[in-house]
Amino acid sequence: MAAKTDNTARDEKRREKEVLENKARGMIRAGANFDEIANNLGISPRKARQVAVSSLTRKARPTSEQQRKIDFEVLRGLALKLQKAAFEGDVAAARQFLDVQDRMAGLNVPGDDTLPLVEAFDKTVAACASEGLDADGKDAALVSSGRRIAFQIDQVVASGHSLEVTKALYLLPHLKGILADMQATPAARLEAAANARDKGEAAEATALGKMRASRDRIRLVKSDSEQAG
Image 1 (tube, rainbow, N blue to C red):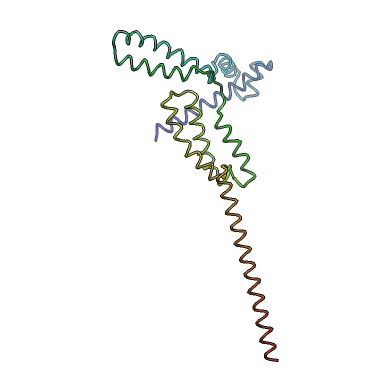
Image 2: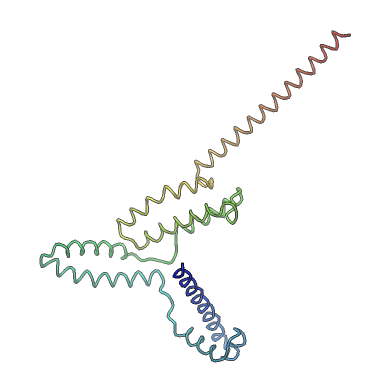
């Protein structure tokens, strides 16, 4: 528990530092000096200088495309070493070489920073809002689960090797089940419409039955009155 608390504290401290650095970077680009940064961020001028310098020298995280190229070059170097051993008769190296080649084939495709399935899922959630989906309330867990599955599939398909991609595709039925619960598949919408129609017909039949029963009672009362008269 203590380790978990320490990790949480470190994460919060890192996020606070990143926020300060981002703000400082923006102010520097706008022409602010260290005193102005200090006053704006509520820190000392010395601290403002440290944050500003750090914000300008800290390397940004690589994009998905940059990371893909880095991973490809690492694998290429490993492949060259394994290839030499494989040609010398090392069976284990030959197997590893084929596995690395497979991974390189998966990476040797121009990538981008988009998540196609996540974006499509979010569009579906937005469209379902008008149909009663409460994405930020009672349906939040359902929506979050669907988005998580979509994210995992996107990540693996973008950078995984063929076996991992195949495994990720086994998540699709689970995603389809969540979409069905959201009434976001054609079959689910047809079923919902049929259920609504059946309920409407049942309600209509019930109302008609009540009208007939009421009419029969009126006739019975009228007949009894005539006989009594």
